[in-house]
Image (cartoon, rainbow, N blue to C red; front, side):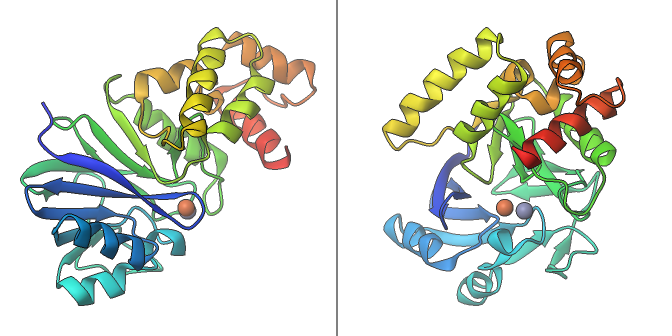
Amino acid sequence: MSVLNISPIRAFSDNYIWLITRENEAYVVDPGEPEPVTRALDAASLRLAGILVTHHHFDHTGAVKALKEASGCDVWGPPDSPAGPYDHIVAEGSTVSVLGEDFSVLAVPGHTLDHIAYYSRGEQALFCGDTLFVGGCGRVFEGTPPQMRASLSKLTQLPADTRVFCAHEYTLANLHFAQLVEPDNADLSRFLSACEKRRQNNQPTVPSLIGDELAYNPFLRWDSPAVRQTLADAGRLIEDTPDGVFTAVREWKNNA
Ligand code: ZN
Ligand code: FE
């Protein structure tokens, strides 16, 4: 059972900086802005003990330097990162102890080439930055669509009850797009209604669960006959392979 407390700190217009706490100690994941983090730490009298970085983009790293200087904490992040070097360079197979709990590092290139994720079996928690979103996935900026699909595929191998702590609240836009790709998916309609209620109450839709993402996220449904049919009917399926399906869905969303 999980022992760490995990809660969102809102930043910019739609980022979540994840705050991980145990007693009065805290880690943050992907701090793009310092002020909301400092406010959250002060409000709960927390000491910042560490920072985890998933990838180099400014909305995930913009506050690393200021928070490190203010707290003296260490920073973990990927190798060959334009925002690095970090105090601790971690890659696929590395383990990071976060307030006493082990997280393993997964290499998930695609959105950026340096992108990594942090996963804890014990905490049933995945911090995946801009790789997997609720109902969507990150844009493929630096890698290739097959590389991104391989990274997402790796995340789908995690246990179904794994909580997906992604870095943006993009859910409603993602699920509306998902309905174009798979109009008859009942799991998707149900989940969209639940998320709309949460957003009306100004609550986060994150985290979701890996097992649920497999049922409604069009970027993970490259094997779905319904998705392949929609793409084929729309003249969007150039190659009927998993990579071809993923590429076609990503292209469609890019231009939607
Ligand atoms: Zn990013
Ligand atoms: Fe981002």
